[in-house]
Amino acid sequence: MNPAPQPSRSVPGTPAVDVVVVGAGVIGLAAAWELRRRGRTVAVVDPDPGGGASLAAAGMLAPASEVQYSQEPLYPLMAASAAEYPTFVSALEAAAGASVGYRRTETLVCGADAADRQALADLRLLQMSYGTTVEQVSLRTARTLEPALSPRLSSVFRIPSDHQVDPRRLTAALLGALVAPGGTEGCPSGRTDGGPAVLIGASATGLLWGGGAVSGVVLEDGRELAAAQTLLAAGTGLSRLHGLPSGYAPPLRPVHGDILRTRLPAGAPPLLEHTVRGLVHGVPVYLVPRSDGTIVIGATSREDGRNGASAGGVFALLRDAQTLVPAVADLDLVEVMARARPATPDDRPYLGALRRPDGTPVPGVAVSTGFSRHGVLLAPLAARLAAQLLTGMRGSNPAADARFLAAADPHRFDHSSPNPPAAAPAAAPPTTPPLSTPPPATSNRSM
Image (tube, rainbow, N blue to C red; front, side, top):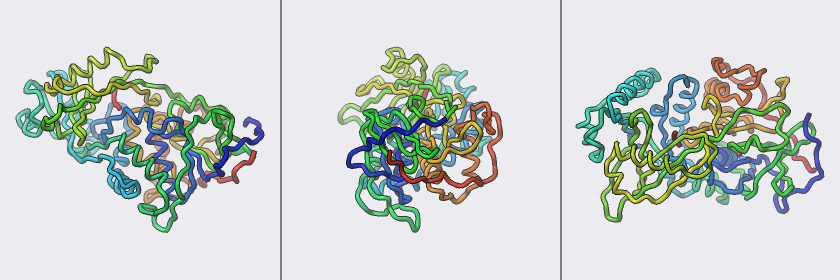
């Protein structure tokens, strides 16, 4: 049963909008910007835009490096989103007038000992089965590419297609593009820009209902924000929202990670040009160099419920990073941070329209959350799919988009779901109409 509507206490000075997006991490911001480009008026609700997991993320765009065993349905999403990144970045930088730190430098994956070498060689076979290029190179060749690599490494693999972006510059650009006045740069052909978005620095605590449909959100102080449609991109905060459709409680848990930012001493030459990932006695670690001279080192993965950074985690990251690149010991440590990634049981996100227990769609609401450590990588694809769901527009390849949405079905862990985790994603294009748009009611180890 849907919650009974309450007397209206609308947000002063904020008219009803086409779409309200709950959550201003990279996923919510990218979706909001895509919706604005498609002519929708948008409001974004978050007390700290860009301050969650997106603030800590390293920004590796690495579908090949992120291949893992028993996660076959995830790779097509990662590969498709990585392929969309150049166009996404070009349009965003034009709209924001700022760089997002997108770099096409390759990734080098290193092994510390013989067991690491064998593990990476075995993983290479899986990576290559997806059609990716993973080249084993000699240590001499690797140190020609990156002289700072340790001469004691057991193995190095080169992945040309794995790149990077700076998540902090990315979220700043998205915020800038969202509120920039006028202009249709980068808008889909024939569409008019929806106008500057409204940013509301508050938490959403629940959903508004009217006429059997979701019609906006309730803020923490009881005020209401009416919207024709609502996108729930609240990360781990999804489960804390009141008024979710009856029976909808997807498994979602916070996975905390420690991550470090280091900087070269003043006047020192660059230490790294490539992203360096590796295994050190079976434990993953990475170093991501930025154009401003900082190097991101990460990241642990723990489910101990502790929000702060772990001393043991920080020690292990510095120790293992120094095993791959000894000169890490000479860097300045400028930031230690921990954030919680919103994780699902199978590491695939929840993305799609919501349904009632009987399978009928709930008008006016969709979800986009649970991206775990892949949020930055999956942002372009997730934004496009969410915008298509909410606007009724289709992409250039509806069959592929249908497979992506089937893999990310937000109801796949429901007992009655037609797409349980082990099921093959559906290949047919969607035949259901887009989310309906009722009139606005009056009454959110590796980063």
